[in-house]
Image (cartoon, helix red, strand yellow):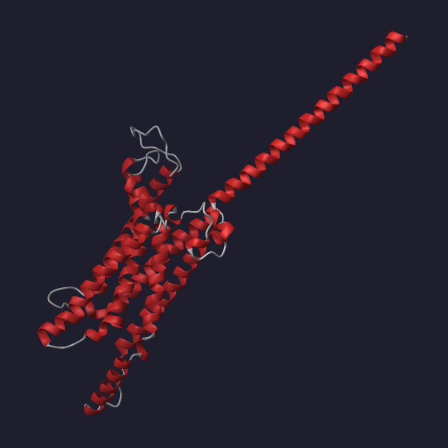
Length: 344
């Protein structure tokens, strides 16, 4: 009996020791978990060090652990901004030579007042529609490459992959320039030079004894191309809004693809049609070709028209069906796929 009591005491002591050890292990586990959570919190704060200096404007106001020189400055925007600057420079030089310098040299006519508004308002839409065409051109080239290879299990060239990764930035810059083009166009009647020209046109109408200056062809041209421009800008606004993370996160893949692809090509078509209708009959007028150089709207619509033409060819049933099969995993017989299969 005494032995049984002793054994029972030993068992109770053993259970107490195990219970104490369990409490120690639980406390250690909680401490480890707490340290892990604190480490994650510190890691997040170290990744965004500016959170500790929310409204710091001067470099002296930042913590000593923050080095502004080591932080990248818009790395994904540098190449699109440089490309936009180059396109704007080329468009400005071309427009300046045709609309300002040529009349000054050949006719001794000073049109330098056109630079701030008129010349710049030709540069903005030219650059905008070119950037918009560059957004959808890599997708067309990728489709042609997949048709040529007969498989989707092969990587695209590095330059094409980098190009496709910059489409969002190019599209937003195109939208920005389109908005500026609309604002510049609305400012036309506020210009002093426009008022003087309006008075001159009225005086010339009186001298020619014309009671009505209505030109049906020109009225229809302006009504149509302004309407197309407004529609194109509205669709571009939808594309810009849908690219925001707060909006794109609420869309599924099919909805996002519909907005960015279908509405994107619709915007490109409307903007191209806007430029074409603006030209109207100027395509065949010889006076528009100053020193044998085409008007700026012809050069501006060349690349977008080529993108739309290639997209139309790819939309043909024979090619579209083959491309759809390839994107669903079909491979052409005898096609050599790469080992690192791409998901595109």
